[in-house]
Image (cartoon, rainbow, N blue to C red):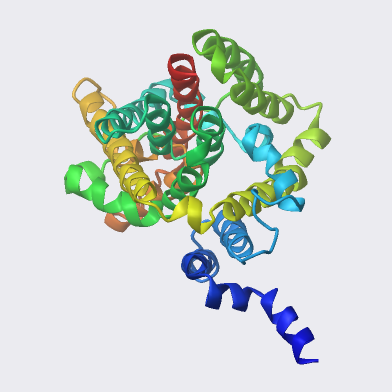
Amino acid sequence: MLEIVSQFFATTGFSHYLNEPHTLLNLSMLGVGLVLITLGIRNRFEPLLLVPIGFGMVMGNIPESGASPGTEGVIHFLYFGVEHEIYPALIFLGLGAMTDFSAMLSQPRLILLGAAAQVGIFATYAGALYLDFSPQQAGAIGIIGGADGPTTIFITATLAPELLAAVAVAAYSYMALVPIIQPPIVRALTTKKERLIKMNPPREVSQRERILFPIVAFLACTLFAPKATTLLGMLFFGNLLKESGVTDRLAETAKTAFIDSVTILLGICIGAGATAERFLTVQSLKIFGLGLVAFSIATASGVIFAKIMNLFSKQKINPIIGAAGVSAVPMAARVAMTTAQSEDPSNFVLMHAMGPNVAGVVGSAVAAGVLLAMLG
């Protein structure tokens, strides 16, 4: 009987933690997973992302669980969708069906703020090269500055799959921390007078404009960056479903049950892939540091460019909305709104901030296409 009990104990996770010192690192990752779950539930930091990622991290770091991508099992096969860029493309379809480009179309100049925020991607690419990452790895790390999780996974799976766990967790973590990271940067770069600027209400956009936009924008962007065709095609196709007025059932499915299902699978797989041996490395620490730099530069670039535009514009732009040029939709726009209202509760900049915010989604996908063309 004792022998049977002993044999059973040898198969448990407790036995591995006690007898194999290296598995103690997995305990650390269990702690990281629990922290992400706590941030998602208690602090409501992007709970739809952090709760699945955190729980997947807990699953993947149980010794001999078979719940990591490196062990044949359910997670191993579900991870196929991450490695082969399936989930990011499907999420872009749902995202397109959820996105209203009217705020951007009503004030086309705000597209420039979304473009300016992409400076963070290429500045961090240069920084990663300086830290001795390969060009492909530097491209994957730099894309964190776009604050777009699906795009980050898409390009990392192609250019540097060995960094996928660290880069993906870094990207989603900083997206969740937008309310903490961005306001201090905005306040440091703007004056109170600038933060009090009130912008004119945006004009109404016709249905014809909303229908034509995804078609015209898709052709223009993909002819410039053909490698971004998959992501942009899914994004603009989803948006066309929404705006056409004749495919409401498809649009409703894409932006609800469909995107929710894919988000669950993506989150669990990303978390499960963050095992101790993949994640707890000096390289991962560098990636997290560079990711923070990328996100900070992207935020600052949008704000600074808004200030530059004001030098030549009669109708002034509140530079706070420049921070929304990163593509963390709609979190960055909401943060811009709360930052503006902390100065003046009557200043509603949300619709203005959505312009650069959705432009940032397109901009990060185009930047990804450029990096793939250069490095793929």
